[in-house]
Image (cartoon, rainbow, N blue to C red; front, side, top):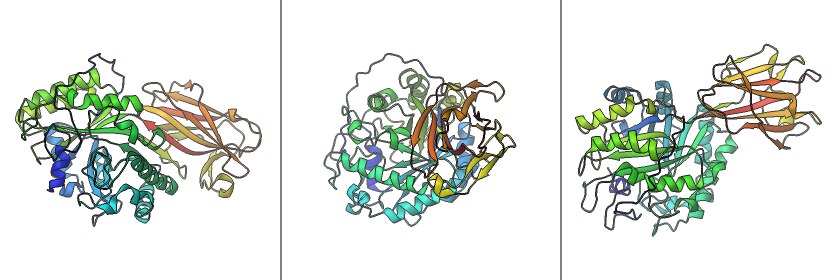
Length: 478
């Protein structure tokens, strides 16, 4: 399509020449080959399916075709959206298509209009508010849609090929500090609009520059998942050479592990047929190298398009057979890390509840603007249960009248919804933001493996029956 996009694909290759702004070592990289014990989490497989109209999944027929040739529906469907294009509003139709298909949307949200090094989109312009009306409108629509999705904002920031890039000799004078400020500025707008259904993916390009990622990471409070983009170009162009998956992703994976323990996804991956055996690259890389040396990867998103070279999984019959073997592997039957946000304005997102529980939307000024909570109608031990596959974190806002004991709630967890055990020591954080009532956030930061249910029980059976109340609930599952 655009020469710039060609460079963008080429950036992760070992090409010697003026087109490459980010140095990628072209020599065989020395790896710490110590095998790491695999966690129990399975890996989700997703795809960017390049035959989609303009890359946007406005109908499911192309996804159906990809599922037929590979043997399974993708768990994640990725596409791109530029801020400056005519269809830059919140993409509700593609979102509904992907969700209706049973996959999680992954939108790569690009602050530019497709013009290389456009100064209008330099990072400082974002931070000073030039695009705030657009961002706020988009975030408001995302919050109204309400379902979880991944937002990969301003990806590959460590290069210099996009207007937001902070790599060496970038045209707009961007710095790593500028990038962090812009990311947090956009994130804060989403938080202000209540778009808590967004999962933020921070996604650099693979790199061998030591400790490069640490200087531009926005921080764990602003990121839900970290990604890596990388391509094996083989001998597709002069100066490029064949790289194994581990050589391509290993150094960057270790840099990520040094700065965060957030879930990791390979957010763009592909291989050419030129210069090596693509089928073996797929099979060995995904079935051997990933579980042995890259144990925190939770999702792999294949860039399935015939573009600068044929990256598709069916570029040859052997490559397709190898990818179908990955699809059939027990390791790759996972769900993507997702999030359930329940604002408790109805019961649709709960699994069950006792009959003495009701919603309260009165006196919102006393609750920091929280417009819906759960309260009891009698001073009994009410219970409410949420279900989400493979729960790893649970957060619940709770409101108390002054001097009420925070032990008025008990949290329980279960694998099957039948046998329950008490959750160990939830972290309780206090906030004095509401008037009169005090808000606490109960947080289960590490949930045991294979927990699918969380129960909240009111333990106090004394008056007043209308206190405490449960506010918003957020559940992360990996």
